[in-house]
Image (cartoon, rainbow, N blue to C red; front, side):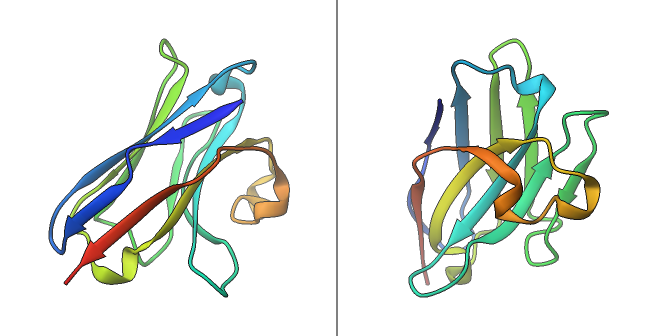
Amino acid sequence: QLQASGGGLVQAGGSLRLSCAASGLTFRSYTVTWFRQTPGKEREFVAAFRGSGGSTYYSDSVKGRFTVSRDNIKNAAYLQMNSLKPEDTAVYYCAAGRPVITGLMMSNQYGYWGQGTQVTVSS
């Protein structure tokens, strides 16, 4: 029900825009969150666009470089990633759910997941 796309290979300092398209659910009713994961590590919170009110949240590692947004008409969400660093290399996942604010960054609070898209940043 969620389809993530837009990943690829980019040089450090470059930009990518990830997209997450939804079918079968209405994004405006959900919090849409991006996570990322590297081999052998836990899935890590990146950014969230809260369903109620549209507040945005970012991990400290991406704050100021990444922007999360949502298009209610297209029923899609986006993650604009600027000033990319090699440490941003990961598989990025979009997720949708209705977590309470204290659970926003916890992957087990989300019931809908995209398939993941690989982002590789070369130095």
